[in-house]
Length: 533
Figure 1 (cartoon, rainbow, N blue to C red):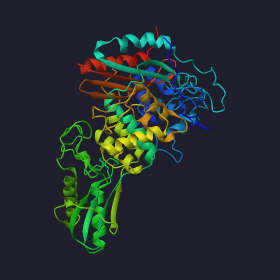
Figure 2 (cartoon, rainbow, N blue to C red):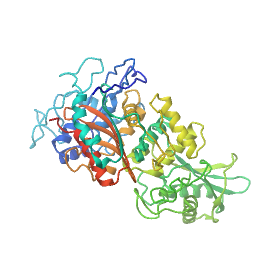
Figure 3 (tube, one colour):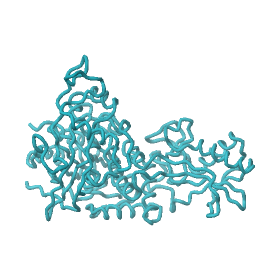
Figure 4 (spheres, rainbow, N blue to C red):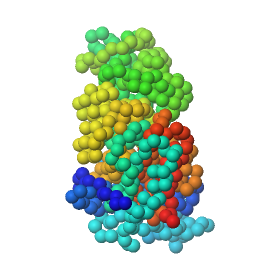
């Protein structure tokens, strides 16, 4: 069977970002625990991809994105911050590491031969997968992509023939080095994507807002009435917990607000809250559900009523009111008495008292993807709408995401976005679009999209894949999962045994046993990371 290549949408920029997988000692501990295969994966990187173009082919690049994928050995938290160019500190570290011929000793110290005292000599670094920055092939040459016939023979029985995958299934596998589609099973046919929708939400939000954008919650004082308004900034990660863990803190906002009021000799206020950043209904089409709170511009701790920080949980029936009541109690602790809060809208004449801001969008995207955070996904879809002049409701958010992907030249086709999280069963995405989104995040001239790759859960180690891939592909697969009743999906990246980087998307519809379907998709992804017979 002849597998076509995909159409080009643009040409790579003249300078690709250097890639990295060298991270801090935490990565060393991970690599030692995961075993030689993960260690090989963590070292397999490339300085740059040369994008090849043709009149009727998609051309994908991995380029600097190999950094995000090499970080699969647990670096979402270990990688350094973004610098002014949008490149992670770890990527710069890797660029330096590439100047050395041998494997790394991960900071344990070494003797004159490069061997850590009392430990085996580091294994030689894997040969570069991609072409060099000067366009010349790396030492040892560029590895050939897996053959399309071999992949068809490998994946056919696992995807096309497995009854666990239900009535309909689609799939695509793309070589991120050449842009060639290596396998396709009705890849252009859109199906319900479930939570793999979050990949599209992430790409749209990052292109609309930028990786350094922060979500700000503020308090203002209305001069005429003396009313204090708590203005929601659409940050579901705003926390009222004592340990803010780097998130925007409602406690800090209360302390700063009280201090500003005391400077004005104000110790008693009328308190209101403003949720007008968003419009339309707050209730998701699935209705009241423990998988997400009402979608409102003001909430604390995602309106969870327990101590959880991810996954399903009981939620406040009115998240904004609950957050405002908590805020009133915090003000009282700082000597300011507030009335029972009610809804209002801050005027343009109001004076800002205090603000707190979320972590940068790059970190929020990683959190959304790793934990499959539905509340954060819906918030980022709404912020995409706000940034692009669309109504900040479900319809406007879906239109904004679609528009951003179209502007990137991605194969949107018959895709439909009715929410940002993928909980809406009427969402539609093709395997072609999912692999194109991953390839876009891998492009050398798209450093702002790198969190889409670094946020993908790592097989057997992080997020929604932490209890999957107990053997075979642990640490080698990074993927976003998707599960609804009768729907199972998986989309992400995998490193092949010879160091090749692939993007894949598998979607199954009409499944009757979620666990069996999930296992079937995992087997397909694992096969890409396993030596071909």
